[in-house]
Image (cartoon, rainbow, N blue to C red):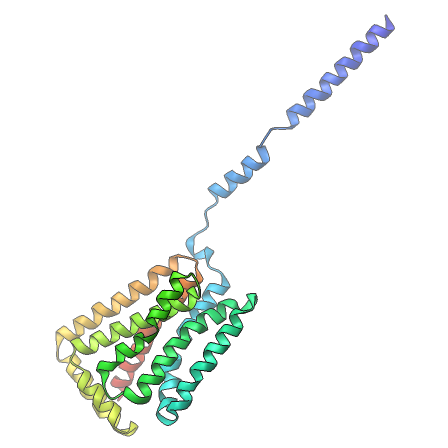
Length: 261
């Protein structure tokens, strides 16, 4: 009798242990909870930005400003040096791209090399004729298209395309507002004689409501095209946006210079 009771007791204890073990284990509960957290937790789009994407954006803004405020004065004095620096920029970009930690900076610098080359050619020898500006600035377009088709140097290629788009919009306005004659005059006179020409150009814009309207339309176009890609946390879109939006900054500085003059 004692042996039978002992067996029944042992069986009962084993069943209790098994039930407790099964009740404490729910298949897939942990993974399901993790999936639900990932599905329900949605960060605002501005929280998705990383420090690196903003650094790319800032570098793009800076690199668009370099040809305007650094290369243009340099090329007037030492055009061949400015042109030769293109080789240095390409070498530096390829060197940076060969290391994982600096790859992205070499990438954007590679796209900048094409902008620098175009600026060296145009501002060095062709700046007196504005009709040559866009064809020369587009010298790197085939290379950018090939790079994008090969999925190589994506950040630099989009930076170059953003810079080129800003140049196109600015030049289109010069055509619409009939400012090409002032461009030719500025490129042929000494720096101290530029102020009166800028005042004449500004006066022509102010006296024509159509010119003011086109300035607003094209400016808003650049603003929208530059802001929309910022919703995507991708470095190449930030490079594109930085290049486009910096065009507004550079054009605004030229407008301010004309007003002050």
